[in-house]
Every structure is written in C-alpha cells, then in structure tokens.
Length: 146
Image 1 (cartoon, helix red, strand yellow):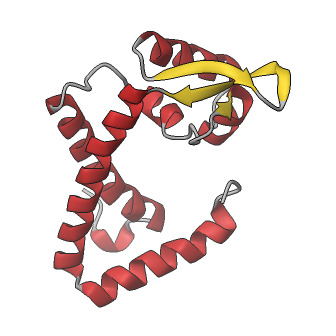
Image 2 (image 1 turned 180 degrees about the vertical axis):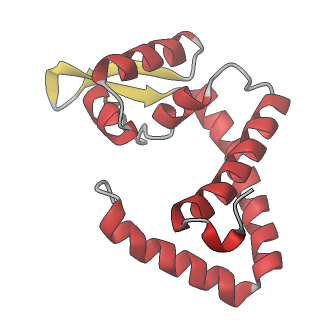
C-alpha cells in the first residue's frame, strides 16, 4: 500500500470519484437500471439535452467513432437513447436521451446530492466550497468542452 503522502493528485481525485460512481451504479441497479455498463454510461452522460452527434460523443469520451457507435447501438437497443435527424444538417443524425435515460439520471442525481451532502458533513461547508472552487478553476485548463 502506498503511503498517503506519496499518492499523486490524480489518484487523490480518482478515489472519491470511483466511490461516487460505485454508489451511483449500486443505486441504479437497485432501481432496475442494471442493463448498461460503465463504458456505455460514459457515453450516455455526454448526450446533451438537445442531442449530440456521434463524433462529438466519441471525442468527449476519448474513444474511437466506431467504439462510440457500438456503445450507442447497445444503448439504443436497451432503450436509453435514440437516433434522430439533425435539424441543422439533413445528412447527420443526433443521439438523444430517451425517457429511460432521463429516469436513470434522476436516480443518479439523487445519489450525487446525497454523497455531496456526506462529503460536506465530513469536510465542513468551507472546505467543500473551496474544493468545488478549486476544481472549477482546474476545469478551465483541463476540460476542452467547458
């Protein structure tokens, strides 16, 4: 086991994220949303409210267009997304969340709020606010889609 002082910042960011993700997937499974994988979820959570092109989903998920297409095919078969014509380009299609995806998102959002309350109780309001502010600042230089 690596001493805490030797953990990189990236690992320290990943550990609570992984714990959050585990809680979300457990709650989703309990609610009957146990028919998608973490890889599919990473694509699904990037679908915008008005739909997103497959190429954008692939870029944001940092996967190939072929892999994104495969994952979207699976999500479509399970009823989480649907493909619709892009109103700005007749040749293109958008991936849109279906009602099943929005229902799963409501479950996930509830868990996120619960976990964030727990973190705030543990850290205190001031530290939680500072954590969010610091991570928001880091997003400016780490998230090309911000």
